[in-house]
Image 1: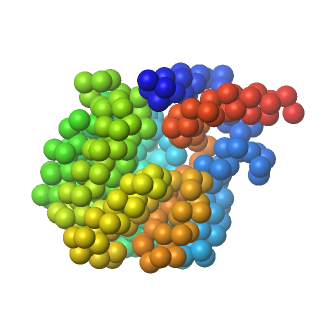
Image 2: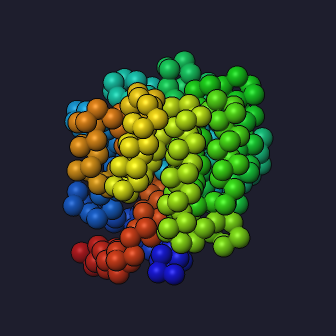
Length: 313
C-alpha cells in the first residue's frame, strides 16, 4: 500500500505544470542539485563527460536523451535528429555505442507510422556506426504498441535493437517468450509506472518473484539479456542461478540507473561482470526524476522542499 501510494503521489507531482516549470528552470543549474544524482545534465556535453567518467572506472553506458509523449510531428522530428546526432557524438567520444529511447518521444501518440518512420531513421543511422538502440517500455497503455513497433522493425531486418520488459506486468511472461522466440535482446526491469491491479502486480514480493522467474527464463533461453535491478538480493540470486546453470558472465550483463548503488556497480564490474549504467540527460528530465523518486517514498517531502528552495535563492 505504501509503495502504491508513493507512486500515486509522485504521479501527481509529475503532472504538475508549476513544479515542472520550476524544476526545469532551477533543478539542474547547481552541480550539487539533488536531481544531478539521477540525471547527467541538460546538455549532450554533460552526458558525454559523465559517460566518460563512468567508463574510466570499467563500466559501460547507455545514453538516454530524455523526453516522452510529444504531441507534434515537429517535436518528434527534432528528437529523431537529436538521436541521429547522438550516434556520431558517442562514436567521436569513444564511449559505448548504446542508446535508449521512448517511442512516445518519436511520435507514437501522433500515429504509429510516425513513430516507426522516426525509429527506423535512428536505427539505420545507428547501424552504420555499429550502435545498439534499446526501446524503453513506458506505461502499460503503450506496451502492446511498443512490442508491435519493435517487431515491425525486426521484420524489416533490423538487428541492432532491443526491448525492455517490466516484471510487474502480469503478461510479461508472454512478452519474454515472444522476444526469446525472435532472438531479441531484452532488458528486464521491475517497472516504475503506477498501474491498475488487473494489469500489474501491486506487492513488492509479487514483483520480485516475477522478476526472478523471468530472469531465469532469459538466462536459459534469452539472447544476451540485461538484468536491470538495484536489488542486491536479486543480483545475488541471478549470479547463483547463472553459476548453477553454467551460464557464463559473458552471456548477460547487469544494468543500473545512473546515481543508484554506485558502490555495487563498481563492485560487480570489478568481479568481472559486464555492467552498464543507464545515463539520462536533457531538458525534459522532470518526469523521469519523479519516477525515480517514486521508488523511494522517504524522498517525497525532500524533493518538493528542494525545488521550492531553489526558487527562493
